Amino acid sequence: MTYIAALPDHLPSVLCGSIITVIVPAPNGCNLNCPFCYIDKRNEAARSLALAPHDYVAFIEQMSARENVSAICLQGYEPLLPESFSYTRAILEAGQRLNIPTSLVTNGTYLERWVDELAELQPAKITVSIDSADPAIHDKARGKIGAFEDAMGGLRRAAAHPALQPVLTVASILMPKKHERLHSMPVMVAELGIKHWVVTVLNDVGKEKIGGPIGDRRQTFADLVLLQREADRMGVDFVVDDEFGTLSRDDAERDIVDINALRIRRLAHPSGTFRLLPTGQCSMGIDILKEVGSQTPIWSPNEDAHDFVERMRQKRPSLTPVG
Image 1: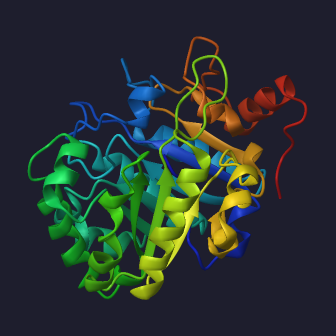
Image 2: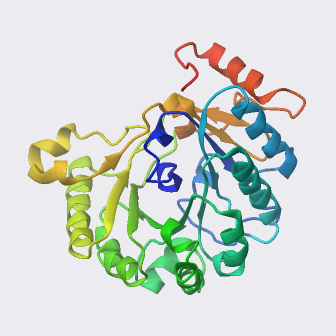
């Protein structure tokens, strides 16, 4: 799970306003089977669809009409599945019309199919998840043979398109004690002509409490420093995403002298982040690191989205509108 990976690097104000993350439904299920899937860990699988594409658009329009919405991010299941793309198209079109930077995170397996249409829809960023430059390792991590080649085919075609090449980013997950899986990533990214590589540390999802990074923190930072050096060597911009500031630097700094060389991005206002599911369930702020449950608020298209969000804020008085 990463929000910042989907946010445009060239917009410094993008971290200051509200961020709406929409989870695009996959009526037939995701085409991959990742054991670390955040959708599964948060219990977000839609047992019934409450929202249509125009409902997502209404939520975005109603929110942006009454407060600063800095960015919209489309995420899994998989926004480029053929049966999901009507949602993705509607949301990208809304972002264009409202002049809100709208981006997506994809596993890349259907990217090649939609290159021309995405070029017209002008997403602010397309982030493609690749977890190793070794096809066998990536395929195992994603639960499907051929996932790597499909994603690479999409990346190559997108990188060759002048409208999409500048907005491409590759994202990877750092697994505990498996940093070697990522050592060849900067070479691969550079060869594709892509400038940006984002790494997110594997996170746990809490059942009743907030989750956080998995693994020994000091070793994690040591691994990240090694990856930073490889990226620097290849001229690739390397970023560690830690949206909600759960990756503490306190222990790491005692042992890793050059930890400050890492570029770690965090949300300036985590409470201004909203995650809307196909069921209408909506999480806010750091609660996004908790499992969805019966207490998760549910938005109905019959209610104004901003009024709904204000009601959520009233239950947590410290969460005030952003921007």
